[in-house]
Image 1 (cartoon, helix red, strand yellow):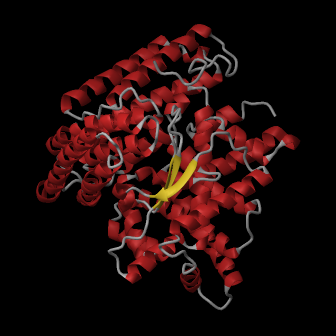
Image 2 (cartoon, helix red, strand yellow; image 1 turned 60 degrees about the horizontal axis):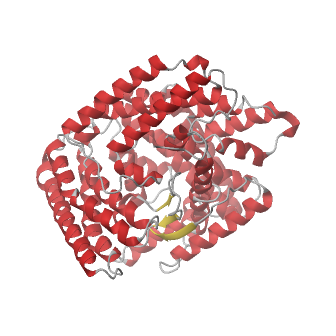
Image 3 (tube, helix red, strand yellow; image 1 turned 120 degrees about the vertical axis):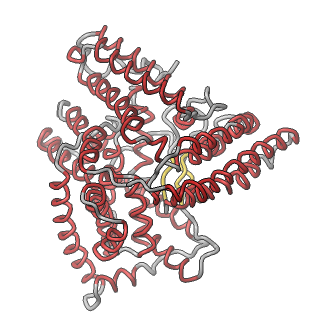
Length: 566
């Protein structure tokens, strides 16, 4: 049985319980819902730290997907008829809303977005991620985890065969991205999985791992061939959602009701202001140089390929020290952070990222700050261009975003939340908005007066503003990828290699506007909270209370935060 902690998942201690029977009914339905959801998504169970499904892998066959669709409709009917939401205390009303949102989002993926037919990345990523989850954390003895690796690896060939049957007419760019990524999956089964078993004494177990990995590798290789030879020629679908679906997704997932045209206008105005601020900072650095020249010169202040991981780790230590010294946000216990290279199969679309242990993980509690290394096959010029993404200013912004006090600290708070629903659901805009907000907030609070750090904080903010502008233009106004790439190079001061990577992402991630939109919402909520509590306002306390909410959509976060007393 799922359990959020020592107490019941939806704890009566959280606020006033208006109707205990309604709260208990909600608790039971939440437990049932997530038990069923994790049955459909065994890799998610592993990711959140529940290991009773570690030998299973997702099944995306049409009968299984149809059973899930029917079950979701039945659950929504039961939830709305069995629970009187008006009788719930505020905390439970939020959990009720989050349950409805989660079920509707899953239905939307099946019925409207048709991800099983349109997303070729889904299948090979499920295979590699599901098995890598078993290897990266020591939640059980290696031999036990390798038995699960074998079981999941044996399920990879039918999983990929299902993908070859399901996929119909994806956008061409999605198939091209999947080809690039799936080659990494082939390498993962060829190199990473056998290497994980190389240290075990049980020779028979080692041979079984190698045999299962080889079977999965062949299936992944066949999947790449299918993508290249069969799916790519018939990949004629549109990546753009269109205005109606874009608006519906924004409302469903993030509660955004502002028209996209209004958000776009705000974003364009913010870009103009950002350009003015960048020009001002550049004049501090070199009054005789252009913005492009200053960025080019300062981007050369980057580590060598050999020092990349170590320099990123050093910055995290500095950030943590400042947060503690200045009381920026209390850091919960249980820290266990490792800085390491990004796994090979995740490198295509990521420079650096945070991989935090799931909220239920009891033993394998290490978190990973991933840094994507230089590709040794690149030319010296290409390697230097890539390392510019890790110049001194960007190492700061990435570290504050991903780790301290960004995603990693947020993950520590998530582990402590008493609600099952809050542990297993979350808002893109809350999570990415918080991390993006931290980049500016720390400098505003005095972390450094180095203009290079401010330049790259503004530069990263500009990139997120470009995301907001371009995802709206690409998904609602017919902008092509080439238009978007040219625009972001010009307006976002981006190297073309990064612009191309960024725009690929926008085709698949239309709610990438959540970074900027969420940051705006947190900044506005901070001022509302300041007015709400008056003279007792403390920045660190605002941050503590905000993160203690879980990660609900911002409208629900505001409702919860401003309901509290000073």
